[in-house]
Image 1 (cartoon, rainbow, N blue to C red):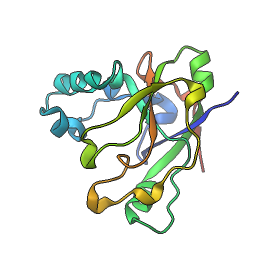
Image 2 (cartoon, rainbow, N blue to C red):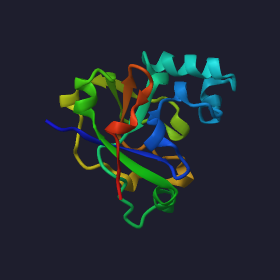
Image 3 (cartoon, helix red, strand yellow):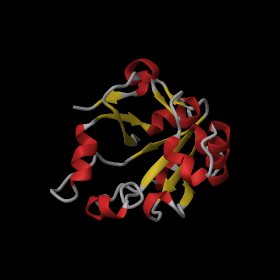
Length: 167
């Protein structure tokens, strides 16, 4: 059984050399979480992430399908145009002991407030079409409006040899 998942990364990346890194493994500023963590201190932010669910700071976010821009909010097109899409087989990562757990984020309020997470098994990953039409930059709704998964990684990294750079 194959479980193909997708991850978007900035165009300027070292993923094919270094792999996909979790928040705990990246060296850049974690400003994206500072407001919600009520701190810009790296350790405070990592602690806040792990309070959501065990290992969140070692997780990477992924989707069950590539983003489908349907002429709605241009934020989606801008996002896709500024990123590289990677895919991988989550079943292989599970079999090789890379993934510790899988969490689904199925909604939150604008800006990521009141996130809703629940743990799932690989077999419970929902591959029904995602509702890209719910994305609305003016309301701060992007990944808050689209179901996605957080893979908690044993070492906080998906090694590059598991990755395929999509066209």
